[in-house]
Each structure stands twice: as structure tokens, then as C-alpha cells.
Length: 298
Image (cartoon, rainbow, N blue to C red; front, side, top):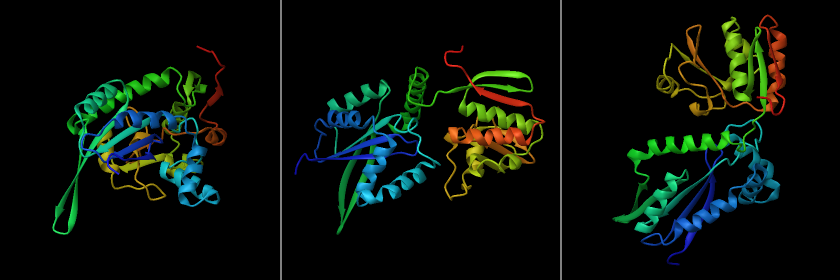
């Protein structure tokens, strides 16, 4: 039917929801308004609800465990993290063409922190075949990296004001030095760095923690881009490529040990806290302790 739209709700590798609207019109109609409505409707979707929806796609409620496992595998998670799930909703508009009203609206919304893209599809016939020309028209590919950085900064500011992540803080002491009110991800990083500085090897730490939480490449890397190039051919134990966004990769965060450069994961759930206690007990020569910070501490 002319003008009919198809709506897909998808998930990206960072656990963000992606609303994709395909519309059979020459100008896109008012698709941005409809897509925004759908994005608002699904913005509060929880992991368990996503698993239930995916199970219906797979064949019914009896498929829920399979659906849950598929989503966890796709996200490279060990367990569901409701606080990290669906932190943001992205929108992709797909049409043969877009009116000036739509492109103006999309540009304005992107400037205000939303992630909306316009993708143009144009079919061509070649003999008995139909070829599809797919082009992203907004944001312009050459300006996309800049706009991503702008959105990332806005997202960080929103989270710092009390977003949906786990904001439990911990008071850490390393050899008498206090590191107050550390978030969980930084807690693990500081502890591991202290252990490595004391001569405990990453391999010894990996006797307690999963190997995939540590990215190791041969040689010394001084920049994230060097690490990305060297890690491009590596795979996690389950066969996936390493997502550098899930690691501490700044120059002062990388660690060079035994001829290798190591990057530590920045993805740590509360389930790993007992393992951290086990590590501290195994190597008491590294004087480290931590406690959950009292609520309201400054």
C-alpha cells in the first residue's frame, strides 16, 4: 500500500534500542514524528521484556530462555544488566527520498542530542536483477564522527546527573592511600593496576577473573589507535572481536607487562565483587581494601 510504513525495534552492541522506520513514499511523509512516538513508547523497555518479545519472534513463550541467551551473547554480557540496558534509543529513517521538512527536523533534533539518521534507498534494474543503492544522507558521513562526539558528551552529562546506570560508589585504599567514592568500573581498574605494579601478572589475575576481561597484544602500544590496529585480528575466547569501547584504552590506562600491552575491561557487574575479595585474600602483600561508600558522602 503506497505510504505504508514498517517499524522495526532492534538492539545495537551497546545495548541501545534502535527504531527503524521504512516508508514507501517519495518524500518520507511525516515519518520522523511516527518514529519518535515509537521511540518514546519503547524507551522504558527492560531486558526481560526484550527477551519476551524476542521469544515471540522465535516461536513462542517456550523460547524465552533461548531468546535471553541470544541477547546476552549478542551483547557479550554474562548476565542481564537492567540498569545498562536501553540507556538510549536511536532512530533510523529509511525512504526513497526525504522532504526539506524532515531533513530540517532531523538536523535540529540531532543538535539536541538525539541520534537520528536518514538513509535513502533507491532501486535500479539491471537485466533481471534489482540493485539497491543505499546512502546515508543525514548526518553526512564526513560530519558523523563530530556529531557522535557531541552526542557522547551530552549523554555523559545526562548520566552524571543521575541516569540509569549503577552509580554505587566505593571507598578504596591502596597501601594506605585513599581513593574515595570510586565507581565500580574504576574500582576494578585501580585494584588491577596496583596488583600489576606490585608484580602480580595479568595471567595470575586471570586465574580468578575471565580472560575476556583483559585485552593483550604483543609489543608496546602508546595510543588507542595503535591498540585498535593490533587488536583487529584478535578474538575473545568465544570467537568475537574485541570492542575497545568496553576497555580502558587511554595512554595512561594501558599497561605494558612482559612484552605485552594490556587493556582492562570497563564492564564490571556486582557479581564480580566476591572475586575481587578473593583476589585480595590471595595476595595480601598488596595492601588493598574497599567498602561501599555511605550514601551522601562527599
